[in-house]
Structures are given as structure tokens and as C-alpha cells.
Image (cartoon, rainbow, N blue to C red):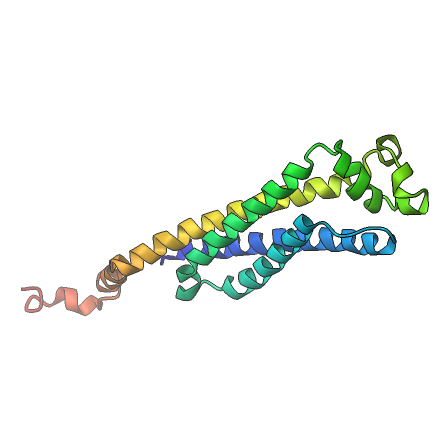
Length: 194
């Protein structure tokens, strides 16, 4: 567990935290706008993404400090990677181009506050146009980037875990201490060099 792995771990944890916070913020805004409209129910896929992102926020805050336990948590990193990829797949399957029926009848309708204009049954794709498209694509992008950060954290954690388990880290640390921490007067004494 060298300095490089500790620094890289902190960078990955902070990127996981930032991407999860952005996802939660955008989805919370959508849920707020949806609640203002009277005739909607929240999609289970969006709730899944929100819950996974909240759990990722908690885990990344706990694991941000590069102690040994944070490297031992590589199975948790793997689980969050898989959950994030599933969430990305669920949302990308709904819509990725902002032209689908689901987009203009659900996401764009509530994000653009079109319930104030007309009832949902009379809204068409031409009316909604691209309302909320950037936020939806941002959610997809940050889901993917967060998933890749979880994957890299899992790989780094597994590498450090194997290194600690095989004892390479201990031998490297003791060799460093012997090489660089030895006193200068010991090297000049010929009796100790035998």
C-alpha cells in the first residue's frame, strides 16, 4: 500500500462521490417537479437509480480515507460497479436520444413543467421538444463515469489486498527502512559489516 495507491484511491473515491451527488441532485429535482404535477407516478427505474446513488454517497464518504479497511472493501466496490452498470442500462434502455415516447411523455413533460400548459394526453413530441434532455444525458454520463470509478477502485483494492496478503508490502517497507533509515556511523564500522 504505497503512496501512489493511496492517492489514486482518494481521487477515485472523490470522483465516485461527486458523480453520485450530481445524479441524486438531478433526480431529486425531477422528483420535485413531478410532485408539483398532479397526475404522475414515479418510475421504478428512477427510484432504483436514486437509491443506488444515495448508497454510493454513503460508501464513498466512509471509504474516502485511504486506510487498510478501505482497500479491503473491494468486494463492495465490485457490487457498486455492477449496480451502477445495471442502473445505467435501465435508464439507457428507456431513452438515450431524447426522442422516445417515454422521454416526451414522461421526463420532458415533467421537467419542462408542461402540466401547466395542457394535460398529459394532449402533449406531443413537438410541444415538449428537448426539455430536460441535457439533465437526462448528464445522469447517464455520470452513472457511467461513477461506475468506471467503482470498477477502478475494485481493481486497485484487489491489487493492494493481494499485495498485503502475500506480504510484499511488509517486506518492501522493511527493506526501505533498512536501506534508507540506517545510521551513517554503522556503515563506517568494519566490525558490523561482517
